[in-house]
Length: 478
Ligand SMILES: Cc1ncc(COP(=O)(O)O)c(C=O)c1O
Image (cartoon, rainbow, N blue to C red):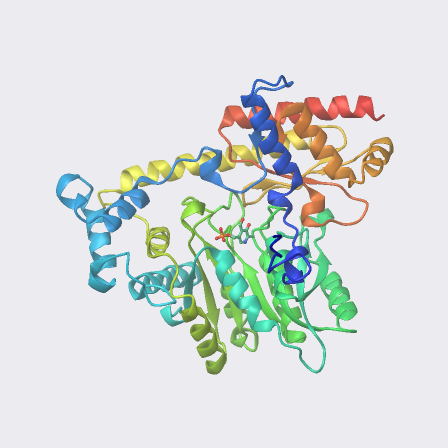
């Protein structure tokens, strides 16, 4: 007898059917298929797939920081203290963390917002970063920044004044945001970053976006990604001030996603919280949710899932409701929290782990700095390519001119021109990048995003492959 499914594509939450996430989309699926074909001995013009589609440093060859891994090992298995020669600062760190864990076990639930000892150290880190007081009570750890970003967005789903809520997203955006809004059934309203001016936010464009969206929605949140993903810019103080004023004028809640703050190459990173504070009243009294992650920066422990949100100046009842909702999820991984502890308080000079830590940190910064320079120089030397300076993050987002004939070939296949380009790039070189369509872009412009923290030789090989491919592509589609 045929058993009817309880859950079908008609009866599932329809929002889930509409989620699109190009970072793991069809081109990446094709890359996985090609890898299997290569394993079976199928002949290709290349011998391996180079994954440049996802910002996952360890998967690209960056080595884990020894101090972090020693803290994790000892926290998970305190008996190792007897049989290993882990340095004294590792042992001390683990003692401090375990003292705050029920019965000294990282296997026990922590408070929903995270261990107090770690939230206190996060507050110290933020205070040192910004020169502004920070409180452990405003910090909520999560299973990655994504977890707390969704939790914060969830606070805004309610209609206000009879209008559905809308969230302002940058274009290009990191598609986690659009996907979450789709899942939550919330509307997005897009503002374009200004590619001609280093991907800055223009106030005129923010105003246009707000005005148009306000006709039939209530704009409640402004998301800013700084340093930018996929765009790699670090915003200037002046631009941040303009954005804060805009949010103040329209009573919009600011959500700066600052997860790449430890991935900065040349420009100083300024947090929204710091700039708000330095602007004084009334801006220094605005609410704010800012995000940080252990998946990025020098720790880059993406797989162990840890991030936090600092939520400041919320109405007490709102903060209480948020805390209660977080409590339903019990707590984020305690081992993940331990990583955050190491990120916000790494070994300092004079401590036993410092020398090794400092060397590992230098190596990681060097990979990022060299990758940034190589990608920037290469992309600005290929005819038909242009690339803005990459101040931070771990990506390049070059703009490409796609010949009209290639656009027509893409249309015949029902593909966007840049998707077609990226698919051809994959099929002919094995390089897997994400088409600009996946991040949204100004109509008529084409881009792709590539990661740039591969080992030097690999990145050089990738850049050479892209250049060769593009020159051939121009011959095929003159
Ligand atoms: C801008 C941005 N925000 C948030 C995240 C999510 O990070 P996590 O791994 O901490 O969930 C990412 C991940 O790539 C990101 O690029």
